[in-house]
Image (cartoon, rainbow, N blue to C red; front, top):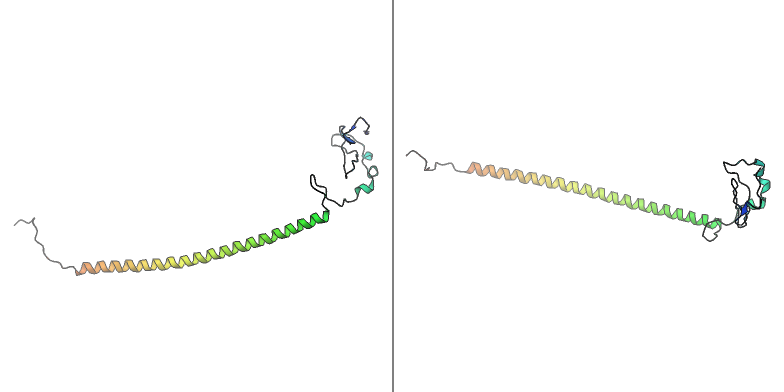
Length: 152
């Protein structure tokens, strides 16, 4: 059975021996034996009777490293407000995206109509051009011309 002795304690009462860890619960340093996977430690050392039950009560302040102590309720409230703002922002973003998509679809439909109209006008113009060329060819007077390459 491993027990903590004065040689194993160091660094403000925290254990430094093999197979034994520390359990810090609040501002005061309380050490309790914690078995590591490689150690053979009796289960009766790790019991609730070794710890003071008053230290296991919930702490009214969130424990954050390097930050000021903020009451838990205040932190939860801030997180909820941030989540609500994030949801509202996401909803606005989705609405903007949908409006932009509808606008683009309307523009595409309009451009398709303009394109069809222009293609129809181009086809009419080409048909008129072709009919004019045919008319000019048929109206051309056919007559004999004098050639310089004749046998006479």
